[in-house]
Image 1 (cartoon, rainbow, N blue to C red):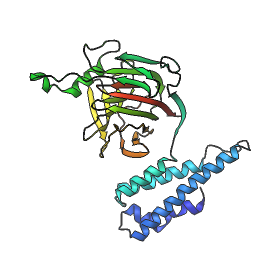
Image 2 (cartoon, rainbow, N blue to C red):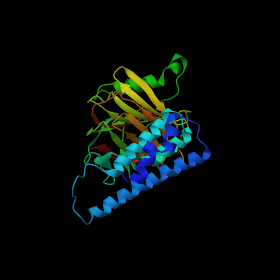
Image 3 (cartoon, helix red, strand yellow):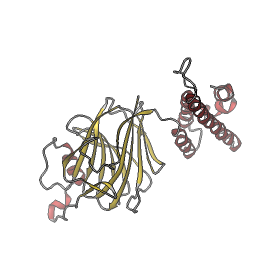
Image 4 (tube, one colour):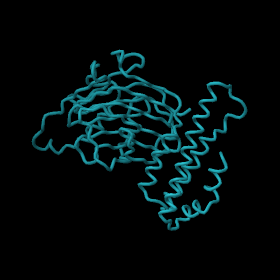
Length: 320
C-alpha cells in the first residue's frame, strides 16, 4: 500500500482521535471524509491499473498480495472501530460503507444465471415447480399469479397467516397442502456460504407475499429467507428458517413499495464473517450479522403466497 495513504491511518492524530472516541471538530470530520475518499480513489486507481496491465503483460511475482484488497480491509477496520467507539455520525458511516461496498466484492464466481430469454425454465438451469404454477411471460420473464384465499368468517379469521406459510415451507418436498394459496419454484445449486444474490423483479399488484429462500438440504426447510410483504410497515424482512421455526434477523426501517409498474433490482450480499447487506435499486436498506448457518447452501427457491410477481433476471455469485 502507498505509504502516503497508509501512514496517517496508523499513526496520525486524526485516526487516534477517532479510535479513542474523542470529540472531533467538523474540520476533522471533513478531513476524515477526504482521507477515506482519497483512499477509495486509490482503490479504484489500483484496480484500473491492474486491469490495464493484465491486458498487455503476463502476471509476474507475488500475485497473492493485492494492494487494493488490503486497502479495503484496512478501511473496513477503521470504519468498524469508529462505529464501535461511536466516534462518527451513524449515517455518515453507513454512507461510507455503501461506497466501500462497491470495491469490496469477494464474490467472483458466477454459479447461477437466468434471464428466462430462452422461454424455458426447465433447463439451463433446471428450475422445478414444487407447487402452484409458474410460466414464462414474454414481456415480464418468469411469472407467477396466486389469488389470495377468500376472506374467512368466524374463528378462522384469527388463524396465524405467518404460521400457515411457515407450515407450507416445512412440508416435505413432493407433498402439497390442499388448498394452499402459494406457488413455489426452486433450483438446486451448490452455493458457498458467502454469496451475492441479484434479482430483478416486479410486483404487479398487492396484496401478497414473496420469499427468496437460499436453502440447505433437499426439503428446503432451512436457510436464509428474504421476504417482501406489500403494504406492511416492515415490508422487507430477512429471516432465519430452521426445522423448528423461523426468526426475524433484520427488517428494513424505511417503507418499501414495489407496486409502481417498474422493475426493481434487489441485491443481497452475505460475507464470510456472517455480515449480510440488502439493497434495493442501489440503496442499502440494512446490514446485519448472523452466523446461524456456516455450511454451504443447496439452492434457491422462489415462493409466491397470494401475489402477482414477475422475475426478469436472477444472478448468483459465490466467493472463491
